[in-house]
Amino acid sequence: MTELTSLTISQATKKLKAKEFTALELTDAYLSATEKANEVLNAYVVQSDDKAREMATASDARLAKGEGGALEGIPLGIKDLFATKDIHTQACSHILDNFKPRYESTVTQNLWDDGAVMLGKLNMDEFAMGSSNETSFYGPVTNPWRNKGSNQALVPGGSSGGSATAVAAHLCAGATATDTGGSIRQPAAFTGTVGIKPTYGRCSRWGIVAFASSLDQAGPITRDVRDAAIMLKSMASVDEKDTTSVDMPIGDYEGAIGNSVKGMKIGIPKEYRRDGMPEEIETLWQQGIDWFRDAGAEIVDISLPHTVYALPAYYIVAPAEASSNLARYDGVRYGLRIDGNDITDTYERTRAEGFGDEVRRRILIGTYVLSSGYYDAYYLRAQKVRTLIKRDFENAFNDGIDMILTPSTPSAAFAIGDEEMAADPVKMFLNDVFTVTVNMAGLPGISVPAGLDKGGLPLGLQLIGKPFAEEELFQAAYVIEQAAGGFVADKWW
Image: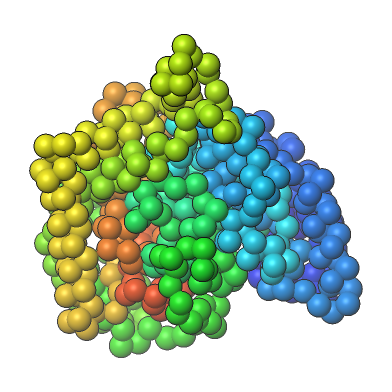
């Protein structure tokens, strides 16, 4: 059964169609693996075993007739941010205790329409606010990777840490995730997996618990580039229920894989070479540059001058939108309710107990920057900076650059409970330094495993593309994957 869980989505699809095994057997293999591993890794907050077997059985019936969608019988994990009908959906927050929606998110419905099987809901930072998956009400997720010769538990990154760990530990064939400032790409880099944040508007946000509405975007985390292409094709759609989703053709993502990148112009932004950048990250970046040059691409040094302002601007815009979005959680209609002396006291008690420290911190920051007298000084100025960041990318692309190559993260995975990170929230925020610009500009970005650090931990390279140029990203990402090879954690769990 272990052999079944080692298959990629692409491999499993072919074998299911060839009737080498059934969807139910594949699903049972994953359920068995998860039952043993989840106590240690804490990737799943809910396992929907009965639902999974029911869906797998339906897939087998379709496959027997020679029918079935692009993901027929493929077991997936779903980040706890996606609404799943009649199944736990809490954004890993205490304030949404026992919430089970009566509707399905558009993205997950698209996956079920293509025949995918739901294994359960995956752990995450509370309301997607965090870079380590340590803010979850259900406790931290453990990265399946470890430093050589060490048993120290490492973070998988965040906020989609459960998704990244589940994929890396072979507890699902692929997983949904969301990215507001790097929450797909950073955990993918930390776990040796592939994660793509598509262009803003490529996937519907309907039925996804909102963090920062102008930045949030759904995408997949998978084991390789081909699987990411397959999953994104199913996830993407225009949706009348989400006015920010864009009615543009969805490309042949998988078909782009393997196409030559000869003649492509790859931009290398000088602003991403930061003071104090670890030598390993710099070396990896140069290795990526060499791979593309060897593949026939042209390497061009570029400038994105407003990059330095991206992180502070992001940590004004995102908390401001979070403050507004999270105002709806008051304990009246659903979720946690702590009764007070009157309705106002009930609101205050419920929110005080229901939200964790990091969420409260961001609500307070967001409320402050939106308050009278500070709106112009902070929020309005941050939005102007956002426009300048977007213009930097537009100028680069207008000058003939096809895509941009950068590191995914400033380091490999760090320890759970890292004292420096806990003592200084800004140090934690710096994990997003290479990723937030992509969200601020609404662009697509993909993280691909590209090497290991001296401790044997995975490191990723990021490609940033033009709006809705996901096909080109998959095309170029495959170059990195082919040159670097695959990375699998040694099983200890």
